Structure formats: structure tokens, C-alpha cells
Length: 428
Ligand code: GDP
Ligand code: IMO
Ligand code: MG
Image (cartoon, rainbow, N blue to C red):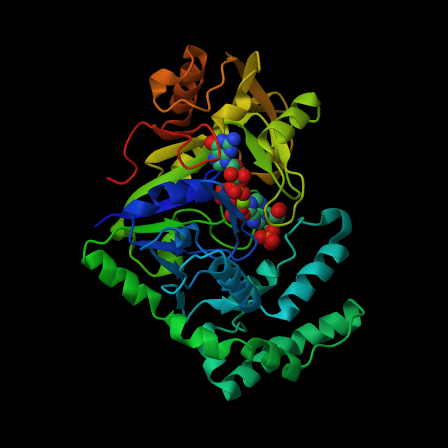
């Protein structure tokens, strides 16, 4: 009964898309359980490169049933744009299932996201502007619109009216914007309702039955541990639970179902948007990692902030998620650096922290304590076993494994599917 959860262990963009794709041929269902089209996952198959946002990366694997579960917020226009673009490239998307309980992102969520950020000024989060936060806020405020609501126009109009009530006061009186009408929103939401209807179902029931039948289900997290609304660097986070627990509530399966948790980490660290980042580099090495690693956002095109590997964060992610296996990506990007610093602890006002300080002020002031590891010069992109790696690269992997407290089961040495070293099987 393998129900495997795959999550980002840093601040996102660790290579979750590639890791999911690697498992594609061995899984029956791939489930997106949190977030929405704020995610951007790159999958490279042969000469083809795909950028996925709202759809789970598993949609590219023939035979897999892709599922958008209840914990996701869905921008319906984006959903069909993404589906149509894949169909145009010959991908079969006919098996997609969408939870009736998933919440909808409407135009007013995108508007509120953008004006709120502008209003915050210096204190902005640096969101993707996709309406994610406002859609989750409505869900928690109990004025959200769910997929089921789209199939009853009367109910939909009533709910939209409820959702717009306070927002229009805010938009007009505080933000000096025009009011949004119920009619325009209902019309927008109903555009694709008929096309959507056959995909919408009780995905929790489908997934629990699949697990009863010994199917392999992979729960693919969007964003990452440090962007989780509870466990990340709040308030500089996204608005969902991107940690492993989010798979349980976000897909409607019990915690006893989960058989393993895969954490994906880069061999260094990146972050998009605002917020603290202890190992961030402002010198030529930051630029070097950004250039060599191609660190530009898949969703917004923003340059990603870059820094050295932070083992305090991986230890924290291991603990919060119960990670059983790590996938270490982009080891190839570190080739050609004489000494590679790795953060082993923080210092805050003269006090050493071996574990992540959850006090926001302490984390903001955290200075990394580095250990330097010897680098390597050989091109490692062709390595397919641990022994193919230069000794210092092997030592780097071993050191990260020891610092993180979890085994590294897969190592990425390039963006392509086969540019991978498999050390341990990820699906038990
Ligand atoms: P995700 O959001 O976690 O799925 O990650 P992104 O797709 O946003 O960013 C990861 C980037 O790294 C993508 O451009 C991938 O093609 C690329 N990538 C993944 N694994 C590796 C690797 O091992 N080496 C290199 N050089 N690139 C990789
Ligand atoms: P994947 O799945 C990296 C960041 C944004 C911003 C914060 C809040 O590709 O790893 P939001 O629009 O979610 O309200 O923005 O979260 N963020 C991501 N950063 N990768 C992502 O997704 C992200 N999704 C959101 O940059 O700082
Ligand atoms: Mg990404």
C-alpha cells in the first residue's frame, strides 16, 4: 500500500518536478495536494521541456492518473490553458481528476493579491500575484467558492455575492479600485463549467480505494517546508501546508496510509520573493550559482536569490516532515568550486543554534557557521553510480547525508531524466 509523499525541503524549486517524473513509470496516481499555479515545475524528457504550474508533474507519465485534490486552489482559466497546451504537444490529459472540494481562484483573488502587495510596500511578501493567499483566506473565512458550487448557478451567485461583499468595500474605499460585480464573476467562473464537470469527483474516495487496491500513489507537494504557512519563515511564506502533513488533509487520506516521505533538496539553496535567508550570497558566488544553476523562476521569471547549502534547514525539514529519503539535486552545478562552504549551525548575537530558531527575530539575525568541504573539477553530468563521482563529490554527498540525518537516495547531476544516480529505491 505505498502512499509516498514528495515535498520540497528548502524554499521551493528544489527539482520536485524532475523527482516526480523519475518515479512516473512506477506510480498509478500523482496527486497535487496544496498550492495552485504559484508552483512552477520543470520536467525535461529527451529534447522536450515542460513547465507545469497547476497540474501535477505526473500528468506527463503515460498511464498515471493525475489528481488535483481538495487542498489545492484552482484558477480554472489557467487549468484549461495548461491542459490545452499539453494536448497541443500530444500529451494525453484525459484521466485528470479534480476534487469537488477544491477551492476556486477568481479574478477578485488575483486583484486583492496584487493590491495588497502594493499596499504593503516595504513589508511585501513578494507573492507570485496569482491570488493564492486571498483564495486560501476566503477558504478559512468560510466565504470560498468550491468546485461543486460551479454546477448550481443559483448557489454560485449567492456565494459570490457573499465573497464580494466585504472585498468591494475594501477595494473601493481602501484601495481606490472599482467594485467587482457578481455578474461578471459568475460569468467568468461559469465559462468552463461544462468542460470541467466530468473531471470533478470525490478524489478522497478514489484515492482511498486505490490504496485499498494496492495502487501506488505519489503525493506531490508544491512550494516547500520553509514556505509552509505553519512551519516556514512566517509571514514570508505561501498560504498552504506544503509539508508532509498537508498531503493528509489536502487529499483526504489518513496519516496511517503514508508509507514514506521523500524530501527534495538542492546541493545549495535558493529562494524567490522576500524573507530571511541566512546563507544568501551577495558576492560573485551568488551570481555564479544563479548563472550556472539557471536560477530564474519558472512561474514569474524572477531571478532566484542564491546561497550555500544549509544543513540546519534540512535537519529541520527532516524533523517536520518525517523525511525517510532525500533526493539531492543539482550537484553538477557545484563542479569547479575549490572550497564549498556548508552551513552547519547559526550564530545569533553570539549564541550558537544547532537547530532552527523558530523565533522570527532570531532567524532574521542568524549568521551561518560554515564548514568548508573540498570541491572537484571533473564533469559529473555523466555519472550514474556513486563510484562514478570524484572522491570529493562523494565526500560532499556523505557529509550532507550525515548533517541532515537522513539517507540520500537519489542524486541529480543534470536536468534530464537520466542524469540521475539512484542509490536506494525511493518506493519501498
Ligand atoms: P520544482 O519547482 O521543485 O519542481 O523545481 P523547478 O523546476 O522550479 O526548478 C528546478 C530546476 O532545476 C529546473 O530547471 C530543473 O530542470 C533543474 N534540475 C532539476 N534537477 C537538476 C539537476 O540535478 N541538475 C541540474 N543542473 N538541473 C536540475
Ligand atoms: P514551487 O512549487 C518558490 C513564494 C513566492 C513568495 C511566497 C508567497 O515551484 O517550488 P504566493 O504567491 O504563494 O502567495 O507567494 O512564496 N513561492 C514560491 N517560491 N517556488 C514555488 O513553488 C513557490 N510558490 C510560492 O515567491 O515568496
Ligand atoms: Mg519551481
